[in-house]
Length: 594
Image (cartoon, rainbow, N blue to C red; front, side, top):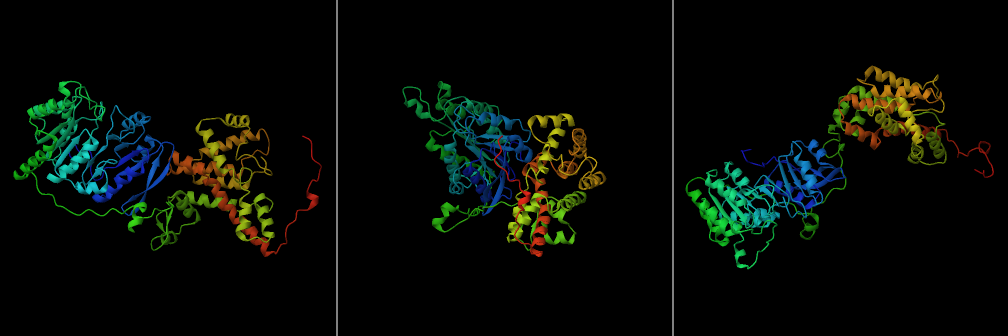
């Protein structure tokens, strides 16, 4: 980009405080200009995360939503514009947070209820990028030729009047190259002269139009710049508010800064100063358009401006609620999917075609890595997943899940009903402790707790340590499955720090009771942490999310489904009758007094 240029056709922004209409208008402008990349990279909505669906032309896209400014900037390091639609209560804090980020170059504050400043309606670079609701509707943008660049740099204090001037400039010139509304606050974020000097350094800008207003002394910095010869392009300027002299008392106009504090701050004094400094200043606002036209035509005659090639911009599809009456409809989708796609010639798992999965000899572990983790994990990782599935597929007919499935199958129920009845028993007491084991082991290890501190703190909370303890296995009769998992990890994993911590915890718990051994839940939970951390393919946030969502329990659910289906088929193949629990296995007693 040229020196002084703020935006380009590849500029992307972060949008603070989700507002559907201005974001959609930005994306519609992108489509109108033929941008390939949406100008909104991410949305910051405090307290919320995920994705927000919006349209990019006819296509619906998912824009990431982040809960903090810091997280959004980290996720989108190339997005250098911060558009702040915060309320007045959070405008200052959110803006300061953005200013502290090294990736942010431009902050536009369009906050509600900010009356002192700085606040603005935004800005636009024709054919490249626009902020929020700048320039209004698509019809107005087309009428003002803002879908392609012109030769005029425009800066205004008033956001509302900037829309009017876009139209005026388009009627008598080839249109604007860039337009900025700095806002009419007492303390604006930038000044008129800041942008005039920028425009002076942009080769595509051949003339500059300025619209000031009474109040304050901002215009005088432009006067000084003109006198010092810092601006070598024609400047057509007008300061509105000349009617203030018709009132007997001081008048406060619409903006906080639009209040004359003396003769120097009057519109007449500013207009005269600008004219004396060399700017083209008309005799009235009505003559402003003529002055712009004459200045432009003179530059054309001098050969300093070449004609702009006109073209018809694409038609923006109408939204559903508007298009129903006209019969033109674009309907939003109802589901977001990031793991698979079946729209092409063949289904894809995380972008990998089905044929490639078969041809490259992918196994079940590889498919899980694609569909669950959305990436191809190293072979030792996928092999570990497959071992977990094999070891957890079944644990005999007596455990609660298998028992429920057997009873349901013998009642004549179908496969799905029998399977679900067994799966519904999975929880904190049966097979569902893997995630909790991983969560507690990770928290304790990361905080540097000794096994003693960890176990005793859990005891004080009245929480049993997940992953520790077994109804049958003892310190002198370890679970063979745990030993197999540990042997594999020692051989293939680059690091087993979480597993080693779990073993240290087991050593301490065995000193209390011989059945407080590391069980298969604890082994899988701790080793999966080592897999995620040691592979180098996951961030800390992603690891926490995987554990929090329930990925590890999902592994047990997937594995045990194999066994539960087997028990269902076994009972049906054996044609077992309806199960009735023997009465001699029930303690019949009168109500007990506690």
